[in-house]
Image (cartoon, rainbow, N blue to C red):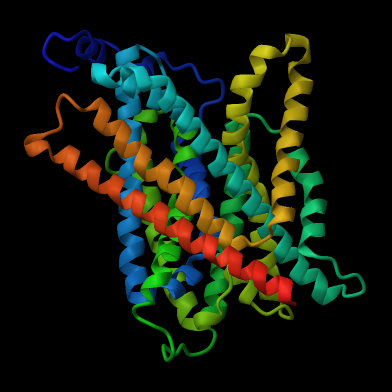
Length: 440
């Protein structure tokens, strides 16, 4: 594909996609960093202590750092492949699914016929991944508010499902925002609230002397897949990466060193390992799906943390929702007349929000949903697909001793192990929980 004199190689040399991008409301580097961080921070960060409880603290530290580097590398190779595909097809930008299609379309002749299938699989992975995230966010916000209302307004005790139902109204309003630039202030505020929540959690963690008695350095091997699923879910934000990179004023600043991606991965590693390690030290095996639920309900700092994280996730919801609605818009808009476009967008966004709410109401098991989404969808989206796409596009030149092929094969193997083992453990946990609920 990329031999000397090849048309694709010539196109890559002659065409600079950055010079042809016309973004209506471009984001600065700081706003792009805020969106990338918010895509990877949130409910996943607060679930890190339970991840460490599954793996043990020593395995948790090493595993989190390794997984963060692998996920960051997968984002890097996918964005780099996307830029190469833009040059090959002389297009200013490509989204996630379009990159998968273009990589196959410009790859070896034997795989070009699978270009459309690659695009469909990528879109399905994106769709189900971020639908799952929206369901998780709904349950997380509902559980934090339920805990507070049950304590301070016990006159009426509602189930988590009712709180999920109530949340659908403000969520339907917030998701009517249609430009990433307008979401940046919400992402910034959500980041501030998340940092404050993080600080309050650390305050309670270090409030009294920490004892490591009873905590395990290495967890039971049967729970390690749950650790992998939680960390992958927590760290992965690749579905938001392409919209963010495509909307940057200076997209060349996204990769490299230092860059938006490198800074984001560094911050993520520090925050995740810190809260995961010391949160597990403080609460041990009694740590809950999100650490804010372990905080007391009768002290103002803890109350603020519960409110802050609920608001932070609420403000983050439209950023993840953006990926879902983008896929819907692609298939719906061609069938809608121009004069009805706005009303179609409004109705479509409301329907998606309520569908996610219905799933959350039907299955309000946050830890299990996190593990399932991380294992099944994020392993595919953030590990397996980027490795396959990079391999296909670079097939004519895989480096000395074909190190790119071997490296990507290891990433794919790791992704498949996470997918199969994580799904198996999570399904077992869900069945066990349902049995326990049926006997109560």
